[in-house]
Picture (cartoon, rainbow, N blue to C red):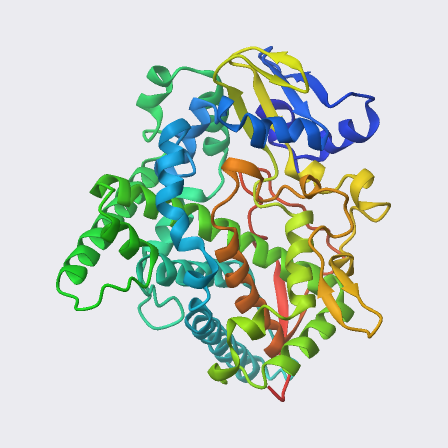
Amino acid sequence: MLSRIGLERPRGKTALKWMTTIPNQGLIQFGEFSGRLYLLPTTPQALIDVLSTRAYDYAKPEGLRRFIARVVGFGLLLTEGNVHKQQRRLLQGFFKPHVLRPLYPVLWGKAQELVVSLEHTLNKQVVKECESDGGVVEMSEWARNLTMDFIGLSTMGYDFKSFRENPDKVIDRFSELSERSVLQDTFLVLSMKIPEWITNPFRWGLDPSRWKANRALHSFCDRMVNERKRALAHSSTTDPSNLLDILIQQGSCSNDELVDHLLTILGAGHDTSASTLMWCCYELCQNRDIQAQLRSEVRAAIPSISDYSAVSWETVESLPLLDAIIYEVLRLYPAVPMLAREAVRDTRILNHHIPKRTRIAICPYAFNRLPEFWGKDADRFVPNRWIDIDEFGRKALNGLGGASTKYAHITFSHGHRSCIGRPVAFIQLRCALAAIFGRFQMELVNPDIPVQPPSFITMRALEGVPFRLTKVEGW
């Protein structure tokens, strides 16, 4: 798969073409150059078998797991079977609404720091270039820094101070590990095809800088675990304020397991959230009328970016257009556009016998754009598909965006292996978008140049795309 459709731009476009043009009864079989066959589920019923009914009959291919673990460790994302079930039970308490909602003021404070830092950057450009209509920034680094700050505070109570003097350099280490290169692409393909005993000696030798970054990240997470343990041992309160504290107090994880959990959440969470934030910026620049509507909605609910009393979960979660924009961007630009699974035992999909070791290709990019579910405008950015208006003109978010099934939107997957971090991602994106577009008008510097999502495991943020920001007074 990776040699044929997994490395295209954007990943999933061929699968979408197949699913809309090849007659099938729920499965399409295809091969790659090595002769390995894959099955592509094409209906919700087939997905239900793979993601829910028989979820633990499938696992990530071992080579892919080893490759991803270089960045995110062997936490919940990469565990399988009973170990995954145990880890999910340990973690799920943190992701409940009553635990997460107190994070809104904390994360809003970070979003405010971003806005102040952007204003400072724009002001310097105005003075230097004698411009009065805003300034130009490349937003991808800002997005990564903001999401890393968000995750650091919510996961382990640690402030990376990305928008202050002398920020923590650990953010750069994650960027080094997740940055795409020819070597990365080559090693990923080899990891999927060649036994570990062959590829392992070359894992870091081909790219020693990544090995150093990997060691630095492990060291950082180990230090965080030990510091939080010492702090909790001398604390008079038993009320944990972040995920790491909860796990330490539960006492069920070893130090190595805690380190892996931190690596997983920091590595996987910051990259995917930053990517989604960037695509939100891109689509709102392409749809300036929707951007203006969002600004009006935010300002009507939150009188000032500095008014922390107005930033409650009740307020932020009551903004239908804000949520609709997030849902629509997640639909069009799933953070992981294609997934690979392998049957760990003989099983079934739609009453078809699936032998052990059969590879399955799941394509969120394709499902999320199927005209069968989303209509003729399936490939267009239409946030209003997520909003219902009652007879009194009141707007409310609907859960399906007009689709007939939740399996038409599989960005976070569904079932036992669905993304546990979904509610945190929404809180982060709500705070970030409300603060940025409440304060600024944003436009693309080069709107006529097409932007293609890069091909890799994740739908990476738009690197090198310049945005023009102009402060909108009155907030």
